[in-house]
Image 1 (cartoon, rainbow, N blue to C red):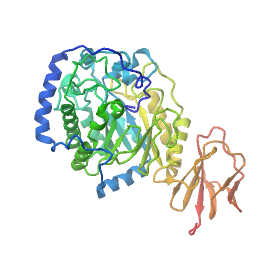
Image 2: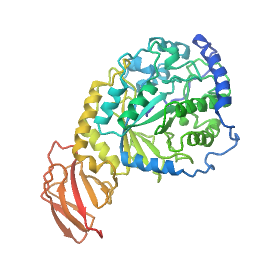
Image 3: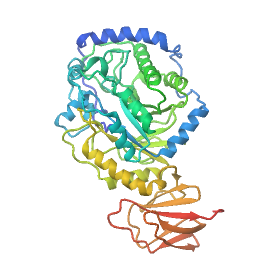
Length: 478
């Protein structure tokens, strides 16, 4: 994803042969190491012992964090933004995941760095982005502060390889977005890739990054210090944030580094700097201590069509990340966009499983959101204006997902989401229903108690409806 990418390249066996040594353009690698040492000494707490087991770590959420979890669960809908140097190349003519172009096209880091010289998104308007997100009915934004390519989309003092120091843009879009989000009442989360194809300390290499041309060897601890220093910047320079969205742990899943990520150390740092900030990690395994919700990549919780999501569904808050087409980053040739109706059904399907939908769009290199995606977000927003009470502030309903749809619940009301036509009647295993009505238009629906629950009759679901919602009012003792 990297947004949560569909990563066909991720599981490919690495190429043989050691990478050739290189010097990064402008001495970036040397300056980065020097900056890491200085900033880490000033900001970081002493490192946890290397032998600490992340699985053995314990975590007690603070009161602020528990309140944030409740807010997150009520929000139900967020927008994911994958934006970086890769956006300039637009996928290079391939219909695959555009944000992986450095890896997929085997671009050496010294060449990839040159993209920073041309990155100048003069049409970026943080207020316009947030306005489009809010009009969609979304309550939060997750944006790529650093993706797998290692480029910081914020004004990092830890390394000059960042949008302020290395591009003609010279602005910090994360700072502008943080201000716009606070004004609009939208929460901001930062995506941060643990995997880094650029940093010399990221060694030994995992499944990816073997064509980056980095010198063989590296200091893993220096990379962890670099990572935690950048996280400290994100957590201390942009005001209160919703949380940190991690990705890339899986790159080392089959190497000795799997047990040397020291997640407990990093998670303690985050919760110390911002106790309310939530942590999620797109690692596709059971959640570790310190994580505050569980992510599913392009699958509803409990499903595994993508092949990423075989971990059991936990008791933590849940989130599904989904693309609008086939790519997380901007792809010039992929116009296979999912329809608003399809995405509305996905949103309802997530809510019916007690999960949020994090819907991705890849901004264009000039700084604008893709017009097609803005139109889709607006269509979802129009649907939520009428039906939002069946999504926001709800829990999974009393009836598990069915071929016809799902249910959600808020207090004494159960919302029956007819995602497919059930016919003229629908039997529900739920008792104590006093009345039923259509949420859109308030027309009554006939209700009859049966031995097994309740029968709804006289249903006429429009053929073009994305989701027709029937509201059941329960008796006080139901």
